[in-house]
Length: 263
Image (tube, rainbow, N blue to C red):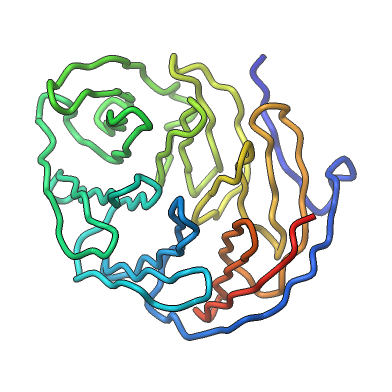
């Protein structure tokens, strides 16, 4: 069943709320940071306006930095490499864990007319969002074979500004910063539509997708369709939570790392 979810967080009594105790470990200025990300090992990746990447471990120690680049979409979970899509050049790079080298791969023009977003999959394929006709294609990059293809409904693409594409638990997630999150299956059927504007990112934790809004993390269980939430320290515009860490980015671009004890 397709569900359209209009989320009014301040008035939603059915969302279970749980407060967590956070212990501040450190904070630092991150004035050029545009977006936070996390890899499978629990390292945090700061994506700067210049396209430079900085990696911090769970204790907030900087362990790697990259050179400046055009980074339309960065996916650090793609272990052991970090996936970086460059829309201007229509290429994607695979960086090693320390950003010391990169393998650049051009997109075949036959795959998409206007490849707006590209992301890797768990089975070493690519999802490509083609802005020319708002189609999504799953490609085997070594052979160029299109294994899946469908078009997004017009009502979801009208005035859309898609900024993120991700595959997780065999679902496809598209973030439109104007209207919210689309969750699709591999046949292009809409599973959920979560209407919440102004998001910079969305993240995943186990069976849940989550995002930050109004100093609160909102979790959506992808197996049960249940919501839960808990408050985080104030003035958090972005936040990522791992097994024992929370990192936040404030409106004035200060990063703060916290330790917490899972419930």
